[in-house]
Amino acid sequence: SYAASALYTTLASLSGALSRIRRASSVGTTAHPEFVVASIHGRFKLDSRAQTQRLLRAISNPHTTIIGHMTGRQLQRRPSYEFDIEKVLRACAKHDVVVEINAHPWRLDLDWR
Image (cartoon, rainbow, N blue to C red):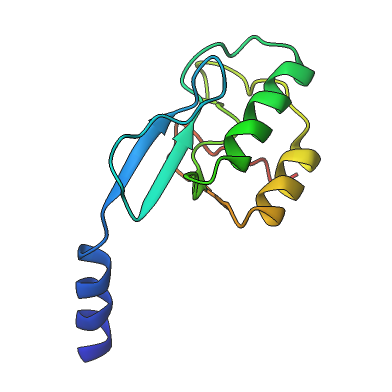
């Protein structure tokens, strides 16, 4: 259909970047993409306060538009890292940052319970 074709054309023209949330919570990107997905890929065992601060700093970074696999959980491989989900979600709302809802069978990041 025309609507689907127009949507595909719009989506296909976006440029994005995946950025790791680094040790100092910086979001690394040198390009100027239309969106940046910031995700934690290491240091999963920080305490809740430190991990929450790490996420909050990344969310407040003006380059961040999406937080990817927010909990870090991988089913049958590793549990979620500890963090204050309420603070993180409030910060995402405040900074207009999207939260990825990853429904991949290994992730299922956000627990619906």
